[in-house]
Image (cartoon, rainbow, N blue to C red; front, side, top):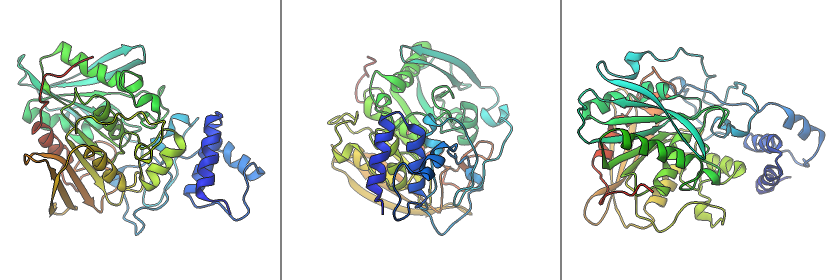
Length: 406
């Protein structure tokens, strides 16, 4: 009987040989538990499987169905689909097939009297469009800036509508910028969090996201000590990378249903991290691009404990990575949203009593933005309100000194 580690080893070999579809099919079968006794690589059945178009789960979180298998073997390809040639929709455990929806309307995206404008940024790594929210009370005074990275298949408009970040930012008078990942960079518009080339400062997607941040700072009056970054799913994994590689630029990071920087360095390790949790960086891999020895960036993490797309243990790995250089004291709080989810909130404070890490474990929630609006995709209106809590956490933190922008 073929062991799991043998499958992963073979998938890694296929990936490095450029046989990405075959590697993906092999990992799919492993995740379904379909490896039978006596199976060998290179059989006719393997070839047939590899030629099939790999399925992508494309689900609306507001249509999550409860299941007694919270960590069942769903195939989370929509977070990795850079290598996939096409898309099908397939029902996975606990998820309904994605539903085609009309784009959100302007009242769902921004409050009346505010602006939501489009721009484009280019550097040697490529170009990305973005949407910028400008609050109604902006008169040239320095304001905080929040960078929001959408999940797979999403757009800035969709993400803004689902999170309602623009509405909370209007209350707090903040800029919000939403970089857009195009399908040319990743078939399902996922940020490529699992590639080492996109995990490094000054290269790839991190350089583009940082470049968009700098563009807003250049063009508008931004409080340089209060620039923050957050995201959902693949966008959350990208936000973790930005916190690790640009800790001098971002005062705090928010990670919703994501993974730690260095959790994967290629397609096979990404499947393992998403299915089981884990960190390539902590396993001693020499390929990881994650920096070490830097300061702890204040981090708030949200994760549903019934997430079958990204294993909930990834939240623990994020916190472990963040706290690597700082001793903290933990305090736990439990609560329930009226008519909604129960949650456990764990706050990690440093020696001065400042809360620098915060984990919201949302009981019964799946792969969805907690407390979001059904006007956007991948949302769970049953709360708690991740948008309001994330922005509250952000504004509690600022950089200790003027940031560098190199």
